[in-house]
Image (tube, rainbow, N blue to C red; front, side, top):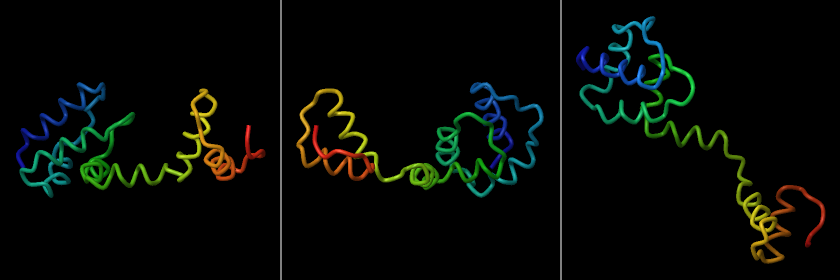
Length: 114
């Protein structure tokens, strides 16, 4: 990996509103050297940046295709389906009574049918 890749990465950080003056290019070059010339991995990492500028080590993890899956699994509680059913019901959409019952049970709500 060449230093110009790191320069471009820092430019992208700046485009996202991050200050890069304090970042150590050599550290980033060392950490990201594991990708060789695979710029697709770095692009993937850029897509995973949300609110805070990551460290070089955090960014390497963000470049993994598994990163977004792991992040999603860590925030997913397995009951979104039940909330979706209740939202549909509350919006006046037709929901089968048994589905409504299961959704309420999953969310530990009282009352089987409305």
